[in-house]
Every structure is written in C-alpha cells, then in structure tokens.
Length: 495
Image (cartoon, rainbow, N blue to C red; front, side, top):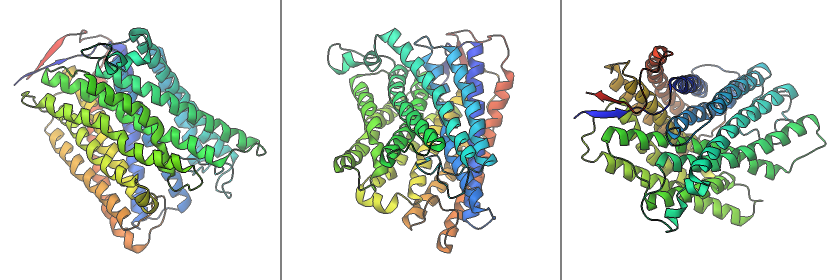
C-alpha cells in the first residue's frame, strides 16, 4: 500500500520558524529529562546532590518541561491551523523571542540566585524563603514567567482573532450551529475546533497566571501589600493546570491531520465530536480545583465540582478521538512508519495516563496519594506517552514530507525502547506512590530507594532515545534552505 502525504500550506519561512520552535522545545525537553534523571539518582543515593540544588533542579524541571512542551505544541497548532485561517507570522516569531528571553530570566533566577520555589511559586514563598533565596532570584523567576506568559497570550489571542475573522465567532469555531441543531452536516475542521478550544482555555489560564505573578511581584517589593493566600493558590493552579492540559489539546491536532493524511480518509467534525470539544472547553477551565481537595477551607461545593468534573473532563474528547483514531485506520491499509506510530501511541498514552489521574481525583484517595509519587506517575505517562509522543510524531512527519531524510533502521528500535522504558519509568513512580514515597523530597528513606534507582535506569534509556529523535530532526532542519522546494498542495508519493 502506498500513501499520498499532502504537504501543508506553510511556506518556507514559516517552516523555518516552526522548525526553530520544535528544535528549541525538544532540546529543552531533553535537558529537563536529564535533570529528572539527576533527581532520581540523588533520591536513589547513587549520587550526592546538595538538597538546595536538588530543589533548584526540581523547579527548573517542572517549569521547563511544561514550557518547552507548550512551545512545541504551539508549533503543531500553528502549522495545521494556518491551512484554514490567516495567522500572523510576526506574532509567532514574537512569541518565540519572548519565550527565549523569559527562559533566560528564569534560569538566571534559579541557578544564579538560588530560587527554588517550584513551578507553583505559592504565595508567600517567593518573598519568604527562610533565606533560601533573595528578592533578586524570585523577581527574575516571576518576571521571566510573566514574560513567557505574555508571549503565549499574544499567540492565543491571534489564534482567536483569526478564527473569529474566518468563522464569525468563537462559537462558530466550536461548531455551535451544528451543536444546537441550527444546521446539519459537519462543523469546521477538527484543527479549527481544537484551536478554538485552546484559545479560550489558554487565554483564561494565562490571564489568571499573569494576575498572580504580578501580585507576587508587588508583594515582593512592597511587603505591606499582601494577597489572600487561598486566592493566590486558586489563581496559580488555574494557570498551571489549564496551561499544562492545553498541551495535549494542541498536540492532538497532529493526530487529526496526520492520520487523516496517511489513511486518505478525512476526519470530520460531526455533532458528537463537536459536543465533546464544547464540554471539554468548559470542564478544562473549572477542574483545577481537584488540586485543592486537601484545602478544607475551600467551599465544599468547589471540592465536589472539582471531583465530579475531573471525572468528566478527559472523557468526551478522549473518547471521540481514541475511537476516531481506531476507526480511521481500520482497514485503511495504512503504511505504518514512525510518524504514524507515534500518533497512534499518543492515543494509548492519553488513555492510560488519564486512569491514575481519575483515581487521584477521588477525594478519599487524594487525601492519601496526592503528595506522593503517584501524581508524577500519572503526569509523566500522560505527557511522555501522550503529549510528547504527538510532538515527536509531528517532527517525524515533517521529515517524511520533506523527502530529504530516508527512514533509518534505528527509528523502530528507538521507538520501541522509548515506549517500554517510559512505561517502566511511570510504573516505578506509580508503585512508589502506592507505598507512600513522597514527591518533592530531596532525600528518601531506604525503603523507597530501590524504586528511585529503577526509575533512574529507565530514565537514562529514555534520554538516549530522545537524543536519537532530536538528531534525526536536526538533520532535517539543516536541509531547509531559502527556496520553497515543496509547493503548496503538492502530493508527494511515499512508497
């Protein structure tokens, strides 16, 4: 069976910018994985790391991994959405440079001035650190995060602007006329529907994040101006949880577009599909409260909503996407390669990653498990086998349609090693959580050490496989020149 891969409409300069996004994002992801391995080695007592430095690594690991994955996922969204609406390339470039500037500030704040308050930077920790760091370190970290957020906010506002211009409103982008029965047929392309949802939830998240970051910065320099700690915590988790979740919703656009291309079957936005995405738009904004289930001072109704909607959030889009992926490849004669395999893997990672998350969202479980390694276990599975699998698959897709890089015998080996060792890593985290190993501790009791060591071994192999992915994409990136050798809409025959 041969497959016709249709090249998207992004011109050469746009491809260069997308490539710059992906290379930067993947390199930072690799660096964050290395930091993650170092933490496991330290917890497993295989190397000695000063606890203060451990928490600096922990801070950069969480912050950097989400930021880098979001940068790469934004490239996925922009690349495919630009086929349907007119996006601003200047905003895309501006977001990249604000990202780099913000990252530099964050790194200087952490490693130059010892900020180690984790990505959560919970008030009043930035200003009151028991001499762990000073005002300069906290200001650099908070200011860098704010600049990062402004860049992503501008990008999401541009996405919303372009969709409104093309479809009349954000409701048009979500297919409301089909959802509410005013029209029959199919809604906008799935890439448009997903991008509309992301623009809505991310704008909400980034405004919440900017608000709490500015409040923290003011308190840092004017301590007499205080913040309600519970309000600050709600804003922080609204920002962090929604923004992190948006990564997979941007990445899944690649699943819709790439599997449809490989199977020569269009992925249509029918009414159930549109209803699912509309539900997730609402749920994603509201379910961050499952991170606050141990906060007894919160109104009980908020905790109940957090639990119930946490159960419901992942299911609508996950079900229609996973089922759609199965149906679109069924008897399609698809030719599997690394790009299409990563797309299919991401559905598995999303499904299995949601299961421990739903378990943790149950209040009686959450009270015991939330501050253990159970949570990193579900999140690494969700991100590593779900979201980042989408990103790596997109990178291989770009290599494939360029026609400039041939398949390598190393590709399937690295793919399967990545899967098996990532499952092993996540399993070590989940089991550590089951036996009570806490997360965010620099030192572990002896009964937890063996699980840390097993996780570190898995992590080393994951780093090596990701390095092979990046080297393959680096070779592709070097081959891009100033001439648009692949015309818009041209079909390239792949044996």
